[in-house]
Every structure is written in C-alpha cells, then in structure tokens.
Amino acid sequence: MENPQTAPSKVRNAQILDTPLDLEAALVAVEDPAAGAVVSFVGQVRNHDHGAQVTHLDYSSHPVAQETIEEIANEVAARPDITALWVAHRVGSLQIGDAALVATVSAPHRGPAFEALSDLVEEVKKRLQIWKCQYFPDGTHEWSNCP
Image (tube, rainbow, N blue to C red; front, side, top):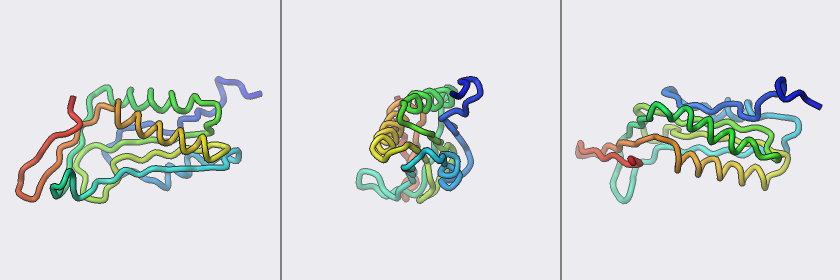
C-alpha cells in the first residue's frame, strides 16, 4: 500500500497562466497505466457572443483565483474513481481560437472520467474569479462574468 505522504497527487496541474495553454502537456501529465479513459476539454475564444462579432478578449483574475482553481481540482480529484487531472485557465489578451481553459481527466473507465471532466469544467466556470472583456469590431467592449 502506498504511503499517502509519498503517493503522487492526482492533481497534476491547477493553474492560472498568462501563457498559452498546452493540451498535449495536459494529456501527457494524466497518463497512467491504470487509466482506461482520458478525456479532455478545450474552451477556446470564439468570434461571436449573443449575435455580436467579437475580435478578441482579455481575461483578468482576482488574486484568490489560483487558490480557487486548486480547491476545485482537489475536490474533483478526491473522487476514488479518478486517476489524475490537469486544469488551467489563461489570463491576459487572447485572440480568436486561443485556448482559454484546458482540462483533462484520466480514470479507469470512461463514465467517471466524463462525469469528472464535466463537473470540473462547470465548477471552474461557476466559481473561478475570472472576468472577461470582449472587444467588438466598432472599437467598443463589454465586460462579462463579473460579480
């Protein structure tokens, strides 16, 4: 039996980053011989929102956002049927097509992997203190996801 103090964490990454997110690194990080399923999600910047064209956006985070993403990751990773997870949200200026959120989960079976990934993404979207400013072709902008 593994000693809990020396066992590797199921959370391989939980970060707020101002650099491009790397899906390949996330997939490699959750590899495990016990995992029969690896599922991932990439949330990327789209060119529209509610019928309006978007040219680019900026993400800003609250100082406690890093603590929050770690908390969410640890909650999901605590499930006994999860092998590993990796999650990151990007901040700063992003262009259309850039990855804003990357999450990857591995588990022995696909059902728990899909469920954990869905819950991880939903909790990040609901609880993470990240704000988005969208820019439009006419030069105007709009903040969303603000409290």
